[in-house]
Amino acid sequence: MTKEEALLFLKEKRKTMNVLNSVISMVYWDMEVVAPIESIEHWGEILGYLSAQYHQLTTDTRIEEALEVLAVSIQELDQYEKRLVEIFSDLYQQNKKIPESLKRDLSMAIAVGKKYWKKAKEAGDYEIFKPHLKRIIDLLQQQAEFVGYQGHIYNALLDDYEKGMTVEVLDGVFATLKVGLLNLLEEVMNDKHLVMDPPKGPFPKEMQEELIYFMLDKMGYRFREAGRVDEVEHPFTISLGPKDVRVTTHYYEDTIESALFSSMHEGGHAIYEQNMPHEQAEYGINVAPSTGIHESQSRFYENIIGRSYSCWHAFYKDLQKIIPAYQGVSLEEFYQMVNDVVPSLIRTEADEVTYSLHIIIRYEIEKLMISGEIGVDEIPALWNEKYKEYLGVEPKNDSEGVLQDVHWADGMIGYFPSYALGNLYGAQFYHQMKKDIPDVMETVAAGDLSVVFNWLKENVHSHGNLYKPGELVEYVTGEPLNPNYYLDYLREKYLNRKPAITMRIAKG
Image (cartoon, rainbow, N blue to C red; front, side):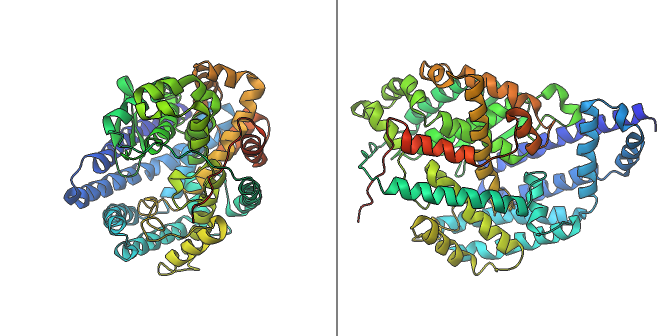
């Protein structure tokens, strides 16, 4: 095999993998959005088969032959070719260690586990889901042992989502973040003011759809030509290809905030997917370098833009027109509502100050359960204990406690840190954006979000997976990840900036 033949082989292999990924994504989307519940195990078997096929693609021994040929002439390759080699090397070395049967068993366990997670959440009974969680944990522990790791076993799972990140590094980052957040929370709580309660519905689904379509359009998500919006229990975004990026949301008739901000969150993911360097798909760089970088884009649009005074200075009159119940609520009152700091139980509804504490709780529990230091019987009590310690609240049932997130049922142990890392990456990008465009928020206040869209496209989206996450942050901002940018952003917003953000006095 010559150098040219090796490069062509890897690029053709990448194209085939991209096609199969689209098929897998299509099946997953169908399972989550439209498939009847009784069909889930059948579709789970199909996903297991497709996962096995993907595993075979990534463990083809000819990949190793091509990599050996290219290793000899690595300095002659351009930047894209070197990244192709690096991506395939990581993928091959990892997947060849994992038995195909384990991949299939894990896919099936996840499909069944999600079915029972839904039943458990509806019933508020962790016991229904517990044996399925144990099965998923057992299989992930086996996978980690096959792959191998240095230090903590959690590193083997974390690396799947945040390439290059380790427990040893993350513990330090999260320690700084936790202390900063707890101190800020105490300061905010010591200056309590009443915030007007938001109007109560009913807000029909059709009315909320009009609002989120309006905001997604302003953000730049092309949901009409190259995507769609559907309703599910737990919102997600999925890419079926460069011209088909789909988002989901969930509507509650008594509030508009949940669907509005979760849709802006998912829209941030979708914009990223739509603006990847798809012309370089054969090199494997038409994807995000990590889930943390992906979350930086969704959290950016949801919070830094979506909960900013500038955003609603531009669009609040449109919201009032679509949702008449808000016509009696001033812009100032609305801004305070959507930025109200209230320690709560539900992660997806959490304010910016407390949100990352939800993630730190899950991270601390995940490390213990994947290392075997705690068993599945102990998880709910530990969950409740940490919520009481960090946020001063206790779940009344398992649905608002340990069962609230689908991630463990999805086998995504190691994913949660991405949300907090996304906050940190996003704030550091925002700091650089303001240096590059000092009047960026004034432009947003005038109703023009294209300046944000274009900066993110040029500086983040267009690079895809050309850089590892840490490298991308340093390339864009000129320095490594620094959690203090996020803490500074929060302090400026919640303590120093006018209009002041206030905190509802807890009743009772």
